[in-house]
Image (tube, rainbow, N blue to C red; front, side, top):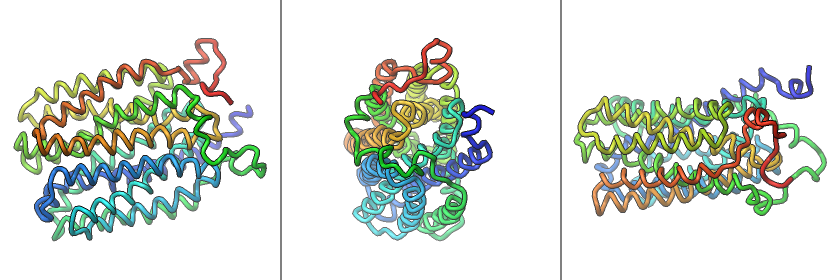
Length: 418
């Protein structure tokens, strides 16, 4: 048995990937449950499109900041100390969302949720990479990250609209969906291990408090930050405003809206697995560029489509397939391979954090302003512009996929100085 084979416990690898997939699925469910429920919340609390944009933006801004900070902290203190408390807190905040009485409290609660979900992201993606064989890294990180789309945007709208018909109020829906997080925390506590490099007693292997210079010397980290902004300015703006776009602009029924919106999740789930896995074979750069081109073309077609629920579902699924595919690719293998393993969580945190702050935080606020003052249909055009910019950025990535680099005859290396 080779040293590499001995290092990776396949049984633990798949158990870890499964649990972290479920954990990130709950992140998506808790984060996006608000979108399909917002028409009811909007009516009950007398809120506006701008309030929705502010709540979504606050979560993303806090997600971005804490993804960066807590990712570095988990590189220093260990994964478990960050991962499990983060899961417990954001699950609690999901339930507390059901108690809000106005826009201000809603924004505050969603901000706290975003901070802990950001901490969970950077730590969990690093854990998945560390538990995986290098040749399965793209596949495994794609599987883990695809849970966000499946639970948050595919099953989420269906769960929300169905539960809304069974319980007295939208408030009860938030209480119910918070419960699984507490159960999963027990399994994570019993299964997840610290990676070997964090068990070493020598502090020489530990990174400094926040090694910005070392991480930002990596070209791929910097490009990932910009490309994440481009991808999130599309996907997260659409995730926030598509339900209202379908109901208020295209005048679909609530059931039709739930069906079409679920396309974001089903497409995102499959794309989140397929595109990172494909990048293991065709390369990170080619896969990222393909994602941006595909998403832009299908979103343009979506804009040109009228009241045709099946076609809207198919097109939105395609946009999400490529959109979430590139987000998983950039957050997972591209960021992981851009730096030494001791800085993996920090790199993931910085790349995803920057994308969240600007693409997931500021862009939905801008989207809310556009919807409120120029019509909600123009929000979709704003998302298209982000994808077009992403095509240019992704083409500049340095190739790091192990198979691709090995085939070219070049020794695998990180693109940052070690």
